[in-house]
Image (cartoon, rainbow, N blue to C red; front, side, top):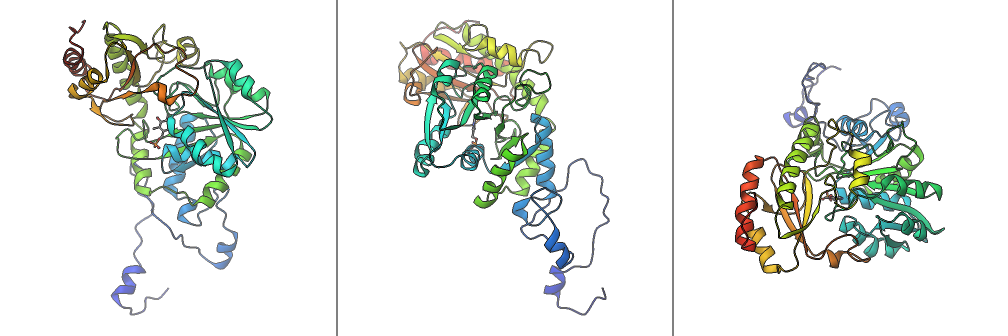
Length: 413
Ligand SMILES: *Cc1c(COP(=O)(O)O)cnc(C)c1O
């Protein structure tokens, strides 16, 4: 087209220069858009976004979000992926996409707390009921499935208390009753086990949906909030996708870029967190004030055999287990002692979330978080440690000094 003499304000919007198309950088480009331009009216009428054959509007996807979706599908072994602005948004979007008035959803009693909260305060207003089941008792799940049950949440291991359920048996129980399963796969992250191939035999036992808080290991920086919803069943995917679209949910291109950048180092980081966490967990297990170690890779921890079955083969039989664990501190130590521990730690900071470079610690009041009691957990306060990427010996020294201040007991080497 011939360039006409135009005002600079117009030229700054409609500039004629186009960079040469091929630019071979390591990281994918960051495409930002609300509006996407069409070539012609014919193009506008025929271009499709639902099947991802084209781009129509920023909210419906960009090359950057498609790239991230594809890599996340590879990570978890899924076929379709939706991106949402947080892990919690993945949870709520799955529920809104798959449930209707009169339906019931079952949630493990040790689930990520806000999942229960969403069911209790939001789903209830739409006439959707929820109940909690004991994830360590497959018979309890069987007993709680009713004709109204349309969705069962799974988490392996449970948030905070880290009991590892018999995920395979739970999924089979749901399959036998025709109930859709959705796994909160934040802990496993696609690395500890494959949610769509639990028996590692090509997919004979698979969850229907995997929801993942990318905020944790995929981000890895403690600086991005994002979630993904991954499926292998196109019908399930499309139901959630249309809800996702109608709710107007999207993510920012810069956040997608950060996760794309971090994904390439994720497996290495996950393993490093895991190795360091196991050294620290073993050290804590030696302390008399610790009455129970809640780390699924340790013999004696609740659900250890299930972890072994699902995650035990990775890393030459060492298994894969993330950088997260909890301990139960002897009930003789009161809240003031627990607070002294948490306040005395220098490298372990006080803060929620996990998966970033910095180690974190949070005490939890488990009894207030559960409907069905403590299960296999001993009496005492649960303290959760999220192990970052600091040097393991530095973290050990930090634990030792804080332990002595908090409990007046010498640290057992
Ligand atoms: C953190 C977390 C979430 C929620 O992720 P956000 O991005 O913080 O909303 C969901 N499930 C589990 C297991 C988590 O640890």
